[in-house]
Every structure is written in structure tokens, then in C-alpha cells.
Image 1 (cartoon, rainbow, N blue to C red):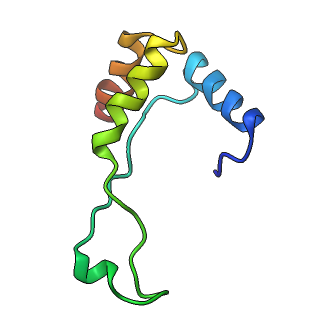
Image 2: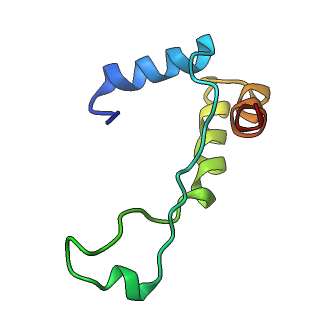
Length: 81
């Protein structure tokens, strides 16, 4: 779902803390220049994102929103389950 305001963000963090959210991913969707040069609506959606997942989430770990262990569980163990 779209994260429109702080209430949505807060609800997602509650879900992470309570274990309702058990997987975290980047939806990495890279495309070639040729694909992205097509006019709308023929341009595929998405962009590379895997390289930002760890730095962004480590910022949240440093801020105390989740532990390093919980982050590792969300990105490694969760998808494995």
C-alpha cells in the first residue's frame, strides 16, 4: 500500500515490531536505457533499489527503530521461510 502520511509509516513500524511484517525487500527492478527511453505508457516501471536497502535500514537501526538482529531476520531469514 502507498505510504501517504506519518500514520501509515507508524503502522508499518508497529507491524515490523510485532512480527506482522516478516520480510523486507527492495523490489529491485533495473531496466536498460533502451527500455526507459520508450514513451509513456510503454516504459517499464521500477528502478534499481537493492543498493539503498541496507544503508537506509541501517539508519533506522542506528535510530533505534529496530535491532540489527531484527533487520537481518527481515532481509535474510524472512525470505527464506
